[in-house]
Length: 316
Image 1 (tube, rainbow, N blue to C red):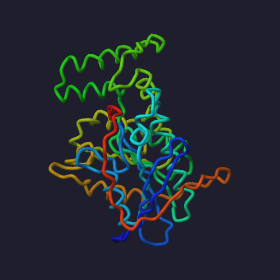
Image 2: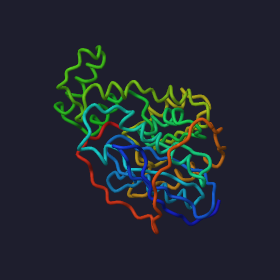
Image 3: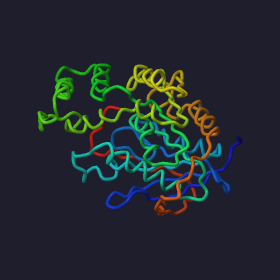
C-alpha cells in the first residue's frame, strides 16, 4: 500500500453532559476506508495520548492515514471533565462508554468501512470488551494490555522505581483489603487518589477472558523494554487466548518508542497495517442506528497542546 495524503475532520463524540472533542484522520480519497478507534490507557489523557514527549495516538493517526487507514481519537473524559468528576468513576464511565460512542460515530460515516478497536495499556485490556459491546467491529488490537490485578501491577511499578515504604504502604493495604468483602472497605483508603471501589471494578474486568470470548481477529503487541506492563502480562494473553496473534517488538517501551526516540516505532505501524489489511467488515445489524457526530473540516492536522489534568493517573 503506497503513501497517501490525508484529511483531518474535527468531531464531537458522546452525549451531554460529557461530549468530547475528537479528531478523525482520513486518507485523501473517496473511501470507504478501514478505520481504527484509538482507546487510551489510564489517567487523564488527551486525544494524542501525550505522555512526556511521546504522542502515540497522533503518530499512529498520521502514519495509518498515509497507508490508507482512517482513525478516530478523542480527548478522554477525565482529561476534559476531570475537575467535575467524582471518585465514583468506574471503567464504564471512564473509558468504555466513550469508546463505544466513538465506534458508533465511525460506523455511521459513509466513507468508513471495517472498524477496528485499538487500545493502549488499560484501553488494550478493555478493547475486546468494547468491541463486543459496540457490535459490528472487525478486529481488535491490544497494545501492551495489562493482565494481572491492577494493584499488583502498581506495586511492581513502584518497586521498579525504588519507592519508599511509605509510598508502598497504601498499595499493600489496598491489596490486602481487596481480599475481604467490599462492605469492609475503609472509605479513607485511597490509592492514586481513587477509592477501593475503583480498583475492585478494574479487577472485575478480566481482559484475558474478554479476549478469549472475542471470536474475531485479535493482535497483541508488547515492547520488550516495557517495565509498566511486562512479559508476565503478555504471557497470559499468549497462553490464554487461542488464535491470538501475539508479537514482541524489540527495543520498544510502554509507549512503543525506542531509546532516544519520541515517535512511535515504525514496526508498530507495519503490524497494524498488515493486521487491518486482512480484516473484513463485520456483519451489519439493521436494528441499531448510530447517532451522527457533529464535525467540521480542518486544513491541517496540528496537535493540541497537552495540559495534564489534576486527576490522578492509575497503574497502566
